[in-house]
Image 1 (cartoon, rainbow, N blue to C red):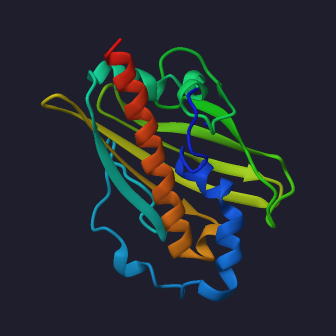
Image 2 (cartoon, rainbow, N blue to C red):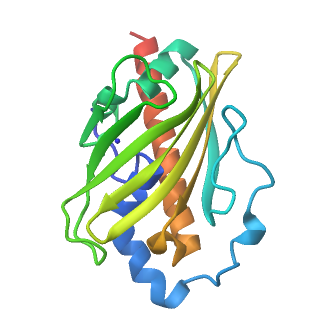
Length: 213
């Protein structure tokens, strides 16, 4: 892949697919030309270990937030994958596929409900993420597909954490590729934006709540 949250919050992949019926409904009228998003592609990506998001992806978004909590609190919440459902309502389940601290090569499987939509009749979306790069307390990059019958979106997600006066600046960037999102880049990008901003909101709420206890 808690307190009540809007269903538009959570990971970019998760939220994109939770709201996929909207995106698919727009395809006929508003699908962008193949090169339409190229002009909006940022000149550089957030990186971890020198590697960033998919440079060829047309669906991408970057955002950030300052969290008024210690770095160790923010990092622990973000990397304790098994407890994501505690603070992210749309995460139905989350399971580490290996043990110990999260590290390069670690993998985890998580699920989220998939409402009825034209792309798939499955009730649940399964996501398997693999950590590719990680610097403790500083950055993490993972990749992996979100899959349901007849549906697949491949994501690359980078997180950067930097201590600032009064807390931590958390920046994140994600790219998506796949037929469903590539068919309507503007709509898919807006859905991704909502997902990333929702995740940051939930992370900020959870971290700051733990800090004030």
